[in-house]
Length: 539
Image (cartoon, rainbow, N blue to C red):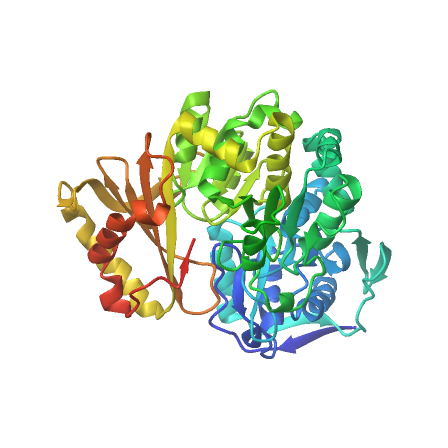
């Protein structure tokens, strides 16, 4: 039953910060998935006693790709696969299943927050035994393997029925199909006080959770409506669809418009939240009130003692360099460890494994803790609900009191999408070369204290990574430039602006950042060099 098939290498299978992401039509090319998976199996080697977890967010081509992975894993001698029922599994749930079962790694088929469908995006995340993203040293070896691959192995057998939990033998390999929700629910119940959350909803508290027609719909229905007792209909867009029902499953103010409009209407619920395609990102809203991801990380960290799992204390907290400095002030107040890392969840994993941090987060709507090795959207929602249950305060009250205590970081991200890759690379290269000459210069009242590339020296493995460019001003304001690695085509130039205030806490962020935006555009020459005078997305 095992066949060895001759193939021709593809040259575009280099993984980004969270796996391989390509347009669906690219993945449909002959042997595209087969080449990528065989390269991974070749790099891992010695598969006879290894177990891997497999699942996905249900987007277009997930079902067919999972069948290919099953047949290839069997042909390459993998001992066992643990697969989510019907092929479904969120990224955080997958990390938990890997860790709980002491598996050797896993494959979550998702392009995260990117659109789905035949004209959308497809992706594969490869996690190691930690349940987190593989290091760059491994992904580089896989990429080199893809460039020289000449053949792949696959079992010539019918597709496998994944509709019912249970164990079956496939071409000499064990397959265990599991309920993808159960283990995740058990984990959440061990972290949070579900009895307190039930009382919150019994008091008449209302919420709206938008699953964006993606994988967390079944998880949210089980937890929020069935277990905690939120009113029926609290979870919307709960059925995972191959094209996400035409939605762009990125939980921000632009793409989660349906939820935003509802939460800013007269019929708003007390609390609003959304998750992305694979369930690792989250957005938090109150009535006519939006919480930035940077503020959310800071607020969760400040309230760790309200959560049963963290009552005895936390090791520390880390943020990506692009995320605002709000959580730094919280870490200093609590005298806990604080770290600033490049964008990419894998940089948090070493800090978690070495017990340097418990919480971490990125400005791109991702927060999480060391309960797994991925960001976790529903975890963040349950954390916020727990703060509300413990304090009796609204989302807006909690956030405003936090600003009064620590000051406010006015913060906005501007995305310039679909830029020619070579043009974007040259722009960043030229910008980096001019930054050292900016020190001491004043722009519209803002004096540069230092400017240059952000360099992270990992305290655990000693590796050094350069990621993005930062301009810091003497008043604490910042400009950060970075190329995003999460797209499937072209380049996205991201510009992050931050201005700190201890006294002015109620102004409009865009108004507060107007001058800094002009400075950022003037220094980078983005409008002149890209033709884009306005950002495609502002969050």
